[in-house]
Image (cartoon, rainbow, N blue to C red; front, side, top):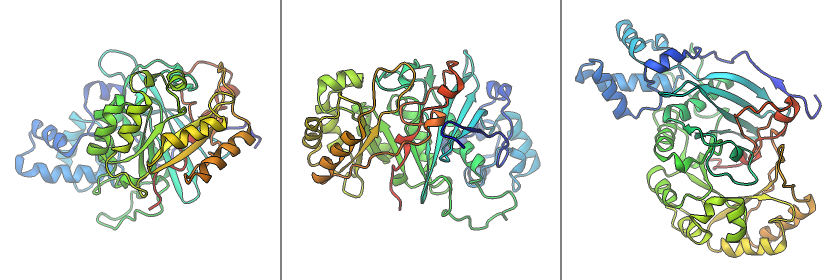
Length: 413
């Protein structure tokens, strides 16, 4: 397979039920509800109070441990109860518009969700990156993005709407379906299902959108993903990336407790104002203060600072010195990201020798500064390249850019 060749994969590993938009228009989904909200939904449909807790436990198990997308697969729930659930609720997966597999194993799904109220169906992208010893799923939180970071392809798509907790969580469920990451249907009820050997071991909120501008749905989805009686991902294996929504950084630490990544990219306010315009509202001083105060911050729970390498923009030795000074005293890892080009951009990637010199300086100062190996460029899955607005570029261009930022986030234990 040559460097530009891409495989389009359609047959599912474990086929979920097809999406029925009419169902979503009328029926609420049970996916993404907290236990309390699920209990209330069942009460409203006449489930006796003495049964509610047991029914919630059963449904939770089938949704998040067994990964079913069909009420009829819930074998220990009586048929009349299953019929009631089918009548009033849905647990269908989103529609897969396209699935692509890069020559490096990276996978990207273009997913379509039905309209929410008025409006049209929307599409988002989800990316999976396999690495040695781990597999990382990059999840979107919004359709489009409002931040307009000047080097980011996703930022050229205007914000359409926030995703719901169901839509955020469904990306994880669908990816596990496609990768065969749920137990086989024939696994006996009550059997011990090992947590080891999963294909998806880490998730990162680094897809389309700014997660902290959609705080409550993101919070709900991540707390369900880390629930020990369900999907059971360690919070040390979940990373939320923000461009710097300072008030919500404090809330993230206190209310969600996952790992934090900051899209930094500049060490001076004047430059960051241009690269990451949210800096005009929350300048570096406020951002760094919020990072220093992040709950649980330690050498074992470091903040990751993302730094895209832009030729003759932010890649000088003076920038490296400024970066060390800015982060002084913060337990941190600095990920250096070779810029991924996209059609219409005016930026170029720093020369490799410049990137290595930059990394050497940071390493010498005592910070880990891995240089990201580009992943998924041939399917537009690398950092800053996710965009579902399906501008009809030539296919070789549209499939040529997206996923490196995703790799190597969260802990391994």
